[in-house]
Length: 121
Image 1: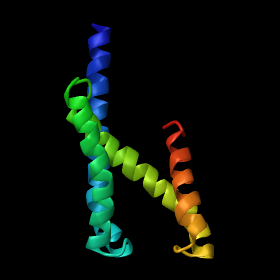
Image 2 (image 1 turned 90 degrees about the vertical axis):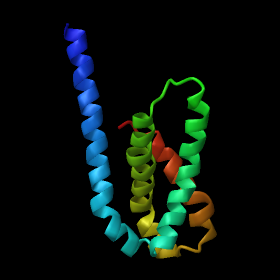
Image 3 (image 1 turned 120 degrees about the vertical axis):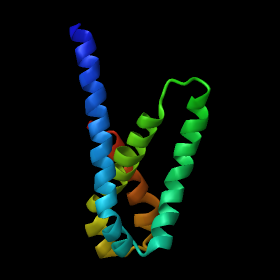
Image 4 (image 1 turned 180 degrees about the vertical axis):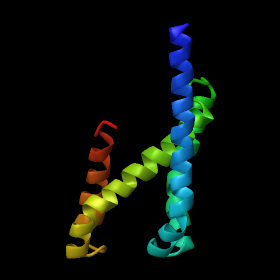
């Protein structure tokens, strides 16, 4: 009985977390479009993340070990969250060196993003 209660609580927490992430995305979308360079740039960035989600869905569709809710959570909290945190951390360096700097685009940004994925939630 306590185990079932714990599982239900975790399921509810999972749905709540997904809902909160989705609401944050909805409310931040206008600012994201405004500061992100317009709809074309933002949608292009979303497409870059979408192919990763599509590959995950394709791979896990055969085993059915991961559900749509987990993929949506990974997209909303994982991909967007880590990318946003990497941008926030790298902003002072980008402001100083410029967004066209080879150091920023080829080394600092990808390395920072991958290192941030190692940080426990």
